[in-house]
Image (cartoon, rainbow, N blue to C red; front, side, top):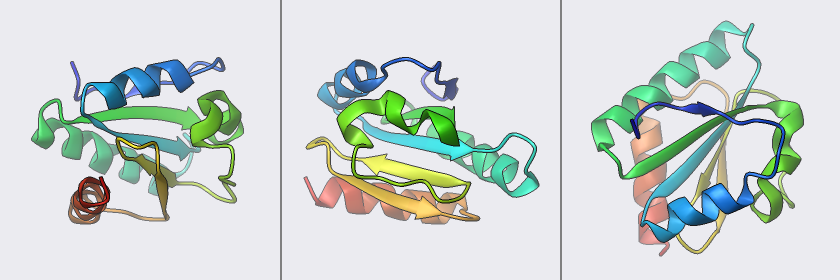
Length: 117
């Protein structure tokens, strides 16, 4: 389902993200370290947010070293630590959230991304 996050393979994900944006979705990409308790908590919060928004949000989960697989969406983004969430709006503009993030903060970032459109 749309609420399930997808673990990004180490391939070009730019086309996938572009297709989701064309469908009117906000895209969130979580770069994480699976062994980190904080990163796992953020992943859980992100999945809960996606479930609540029922198809309005596309979620991808990738390792920090997979930043380049998202093409132009991450070309100017540096992931210095995990967890880092990139929020991509319909114009392809990207904002980032770092550190421990909850559902409220994620929904706020989504609202801001929608307003920027």
